[in-house]
Length: 616
Image (tube, rainbow, N blue to C red; front, top):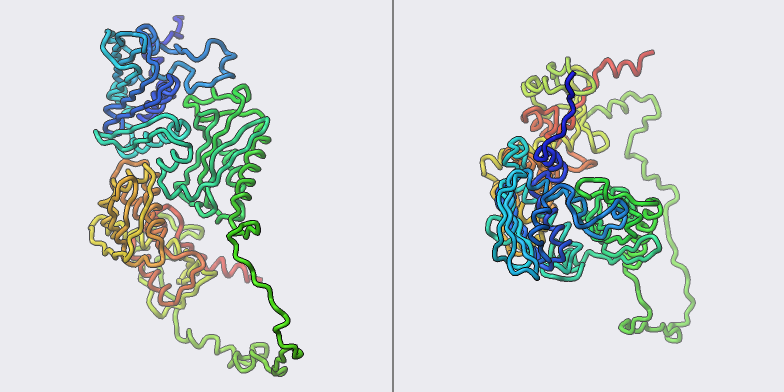
């Protein structure tokens, strides 16, 4: 029998490794920026085209590489960071595995120009799909210049699964934010398709946060600083007023490296328990310094997950640090009696008060008054006329005869019944509709009792309306007397600019003021009482969470976000006319049984189930 196990060629092995390290253009940006930081760069330029598909270029002024090092850098497991296994637990650099450049070169066309300060000439190297093409001496500035072209050109399947240009660029911005936030002493620039999008000069940590996420956040930051034998914590958490449901900025950095850690995030969010609405979260930017021997950063290919020793103890320290900072912030205003600016409080001069005796005021009342007398009939007796009064308003009314509902299942209405639902007769004003706990509308039907979730029904109606407005571009805009300003983050700014046409179709009138600031000059008609800024940002974050490239999906995401913000809230009391109108509009939509997010809107309780409860 022939042997069947064989060694993979290096090119195939590198492509397999690239599948873990290089998932999209933002992965390339991350790896190259981290290499620049390890090289001691004080300035890093990132240049991308078409969301990184055709070009990712990273230029740094670091120490550069020699001719030999430049060639070896593209070999697998070739690294200057570690020499033995023990070095893995004493890491102070961003990279260490020696896989990044080899993985990138396996799935793209790569060009490197680099020079050290002590060398007169630099080195130029070109590779394509792991294949070495050329190496020659060239004139070059000190540092390294990486050009990664046509990512996944040799793996069409991987390239096909890249998202839209906007989504890929948003991911690049996210990676830049994660690296730039904690490396405040380094200057970063980001250009896309020839336009400079970001310029971050060296600054303090707080100023770097403001430069990235807008001036408004500066007023929402509470400083955190704690030192302990286990960890040191420095950074900022948000005030309770900064809490949001979507798009919350939450960043952990461990020894200068971005980290995701849901367990520690719960420690921060738990400190706000009972002081922010349920379901909302606050931003935080926390830098944790810990002995490298007490962590393991080698548990994930992208190094964004870190294992700590004694995590429960660290959880308590983080929670206590945040609570202490919130206590110092003191959300409730207080009076400082040592403040010299406090005006003197006058002292009451009792000598000037008339010495006449003071008597308590007298209150007169009728002890025999009964507020309920003559207002309601006494239903405790067996007076038939009194009971009939309860039904005066519904005399002669008949339950709605919606025979198509007879065969619908009890627990849900399957999508296969949608055509039947669309043919059902509408509700008229004579129907005895009622509301249950401000959440459900009860409609008698021939087969039983129909329950309609009023908020989901309204979302469904509005979703169809807004989707049609985006398609037909006929929405009415209502101008604001005083335009509202929006301080947007980089990702939010890019998204707003990309969906401005759709926003205008809904009725938004938005203009850019530059620097990530926008003015809302007009809003869709009929949204009085809602915050235009919150409404816009919720729509933007709904689009940012959309991973589908199709324009239709993006339009539906915008319409759904808008509908959820405008729809009636749970507990809102509706008049009979409002209930009737909502039910009628619901059955004019396509597939009224299910909401646009897949949630059930209608539930029917058949008569047989109701009768069973009262059976002897």
